[in-house]
Image (cartoon, rainbow, N blue to C red; front, top):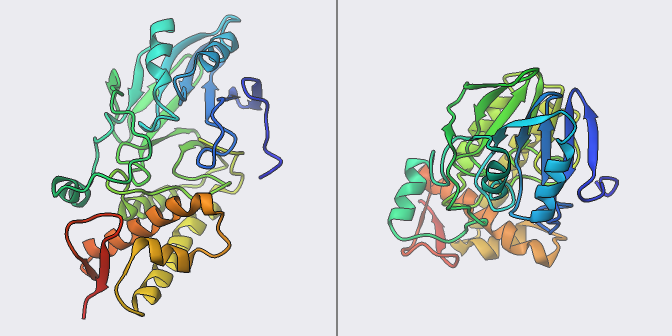
Length: 301
């Protein structure tokens, strides 16, 4: 993963009429930054414009100023590192914005119920202002002069998350990446939905995934199956920790995640929290109200 270090703002030709521009927003959660993809040689689809940054906007516009026209702006999900620049790019080009919906669209009933009960923590930088011009549904096609993208609804990392398939190649957003596992942070993320979306993806054979962060995934089905297996193993570890007695997500994360960079402990805690809520939804454990970061979870007898 350390070998993936492209220059911010440069145009990387990935072949198959796909180009990538790295946004200037590196962080522990975004790795080198957000990958913006340009698809097509005539009419161009921009996938995940990225954060609201004028230098990144200029980089995208300069990459499409040689007889190419931006005709579609496609967004995988409404996190602040993926969607805000879509509005500015639309103003500059007139291209409509395509996405599943607004930030809360597609939210599972269980996550909606805990949010309605008062739990609102855990958001991963939500773009609540995001509003697409065209709302996509699973299986919808988006077509340009020399390309077509198939929409695959993949909730889990976020309820309105979609991937875009270009033949056997997939723009996987934050659902499947090679540099890290996807963050699932309730109530915006849902672990049960995440696993179901992974299982949905591996029903097809893919050649390459182009993720929202990091390098291309060159063995996508193996990586996706690993994510399913990894989450199953985490479930076993968390259940074993609860077998020692009732506990909080933070304490369980400290015991389960070994050799962890302290800066990533909050993210690890939210991942454990997602597992615990999934277990609650399945009736395996209970929790004391109100639901907070310090909630104590207890196995059912």
